[in-house]
Image: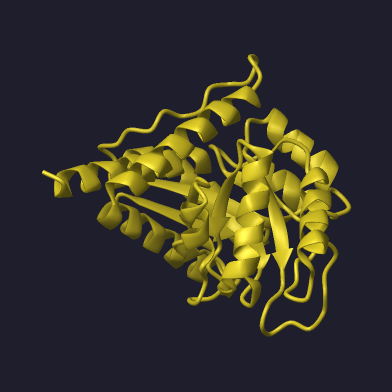
Length: 270
């Protein structure tokens, strides 16, 4: 356990150094995490297909991460705009699902050879400028297969400076586990905000996210560029500070989670 922890912490330190190399001197500083206060991070998936809703996401207050489908009509322009507004830019990587037969552009599938898999990954990640991390789009089939996830984590590690978010589209996912085994900074989704696309339901899910953060210290939510979601976030995000909740970039939430795990593991060794 001690050796594993040391390796993981070293890999995380290397990742932080690599991530810092991608930043520019004129970018605004990211919010500093306060380990004494509960914190959330938010990712808006499926970015790149709709310009109007995409612009509204980028205009949301605070460090709301934007996860772009690799070949959306507006992926390139919106990703560059999001980066200029100090939003984290992520690749929303299509992966094969159990319940969907149709194959989307850029989708990773179980029947690919390793060479095909890695080539498709490279094409997808190169299609999104300023990418700092990625999460899975669908993937209820692929993320439960350790071999495919091992290929993915090796590919992520070879790029340097990237984190991975397990969207947890299936309870059987092994994606976060494999990310940790390969030393990839990672975290898992806690709450989907808008499985029910209604304002009342989205607000209830957002408040569940806050409750989870208060109970567990951190929580990550995922939503989509839909009118109900955008309305709720525009109304709720400005009040977070008064409620004692931090809104952090995903990378900062991962760092906070890592620090909490290290503290917990250190306490067990005493």
